[in-house]
Image (cartoon, rainbow, N blue to C red; front, side):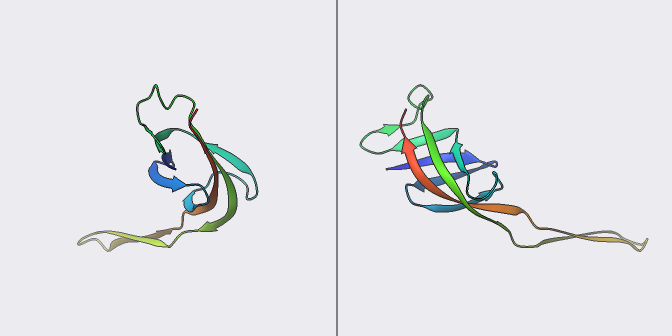
Length: 102
């Protein structure tokens, strides 16, 4: 059985036992419940909001690390106006422990 969840502005297809990197959710070692669930597929597919009313995905936060460095550069011509900046997003690795249909 698998489910499609939405967290951090992105959608992920997950099954029980999967490890997924998502944006930071909490402290490592804690349990979280992920909602909204957009799709649950097992024996039958649940996709409408009425069918997914009580569906949830439970996960455990395994570790927290940082993503790759993103470098940006902006300038204005003819004026020696330049700016270089960087960003590293904090990510959490979660392990899916259960999918409930609701």
